[in-house]
Picture (tube, rainbow, N blue to C red):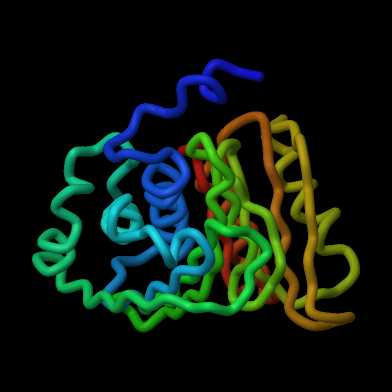
Length: 219
């Protein structure tokens, strides 16, 4: 057990699960969308659905979407900041069962028309997992340097991407691949011990099979 499991993260708000975790979900969505959000439909499940108003879960997620971290006082002004940023927000709750009580679905539209549908889970102590991206099951924590690639599944992709990273002597600590089926769309999540340079991100992005390549630094 680490110190942050005992005292929790530095944050604005009453709950590490419902406030700090929610802000991290929004912030991860901000980086994954990779453009300014203009529409956000947020649906809360389980405990989130019952307590989001009192814990400021809605404000935390919106602030995260705008690029603010969990310890930023701006969380309190999230709705007014969203209005200034021309971000249209709708908040919904669902009685459907989810895999975790602290679950939120974010359906986003970016300023250039890009759409993103993610499911985020707040695990406690400010820790989170993005458990689904555009229908793909996955696991993105935001705690490590992460490369997220969406591509057309075919042989040789994993080894090719790995070789590009190895060119810079960057060690891969963990890799997970999720796909909808053989030769269909896939998501590859690579966590590394060091930051992946933009030139490598651009090199991977230039592959014809790639739909999206995003590098995320630890939050």
